[in-house]
Amino acid sequence: MKLVFKEHQQITDTAFSFTFQPREPVSWIAGQSIRLEISATDYGTYERRFTISSAPHEGIITITTRNSKSDFKQRLFTLQSGDIIDGYGIQGHFNWSNENDPLFVAAGIGITAFYSMLKQRLFEQKPLAATLVYGHKPHDAPFRETLKAWQRQFGEFRFDDVSGQRITAELLNRIVPDFQTKIIYI
Image 1 (cartoon, rainbow, N blue to C red):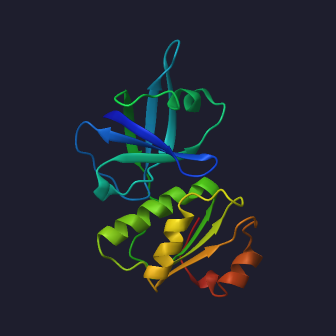
Image 2: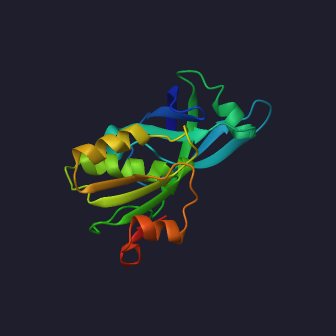
């Protein structure tokens, strides 16, 4: 599929979201990933798979990533509004089924799938009955403020921000004592 690059936004000190408009309607399930292919500056193409951080109802493809010295990401950051890239193979089974009160465990940029799932459930007016434990570097947590707002707004959604901590079984046991009885998404 052809994707028209719209913009990129810096969302933390090191994380950026890149938004693409598909030329034709596309569907996916929140939590799935897409393979992006960008023409190389000299010859060939660069490709990389990313979790889609936008929700399906939005009708746009957004990925959220950190910059690095990889050829793909260096080229990604040079895209101009209107540039066209290719997207392939939307796939994956990392999706929130209908389990009640699952435990989501995310670290760093790994928050993207959960963010997409939660946004889509909000749109569908489904309950947000889940616990999310989110570990990240201090001052570098994509979507943290939105997740905190959802916790305040929706009593069934529990958000545990464990900034600067390594997520271990001991930490999970302290935060969610019954974690071993839950469906866990990592």
